[in-house]
Image 1 (cartoon, one colour):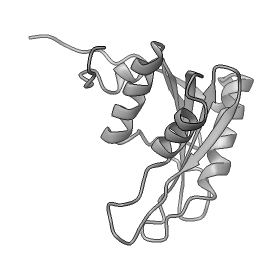
Image 2: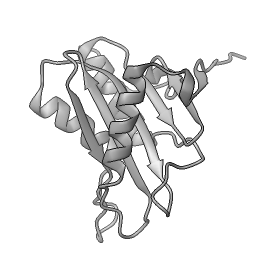
Image 3: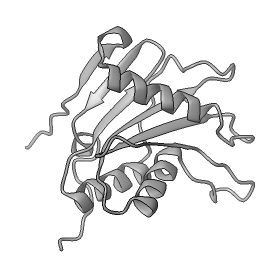
Image 4: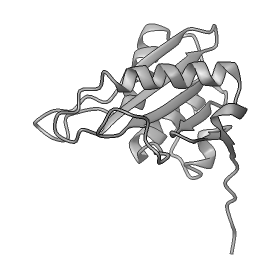
Length: 156
C-alpha cells in the first residue's frame, strides 16, 4: 500500500505575509461582488501573475444550473485569456457567509477548479501557491498537487 501525504501550512491571519494578506483582501472584495442569488454562497478568488498584477474572480450562478462558473475558474480563465504569457504564481480563495462576513470555515476548490489549477501549473511549468482563507485561519499549499495528487495532464 502506498500513501500520499498532503503538505500545507496552517497559519493565523497575523502570521502571513503582507503579499498574502493583500491577495486575500482582493479575494474578499471579489466575493462581495459574486452573483449567487440561488445559493447565496459567495466565493472570491484572486490570482497574482508573475509581474505582480492581481486579477479577481467570483462565482457566477445561472438559473440553468450548472451553467454558472466558480470564482477560481473565472479568475484563472480571465488571467490566461488576457495575459497568456504571464504565469500565475498564487491564488487566494475565500467565502462569505450569509451575513457577508468571511466564513469561519476554510473552503477548498471543487474538483473542476483543482483540475484547471493543475492545467495552469502544467501550462507554465511552475507551482501555484494556493491560499485558502477563513475568518481565523489560512491554509497555504505550495502546489495543486497536494489537493489533486492524481491530476489529469496530457504530456506535450
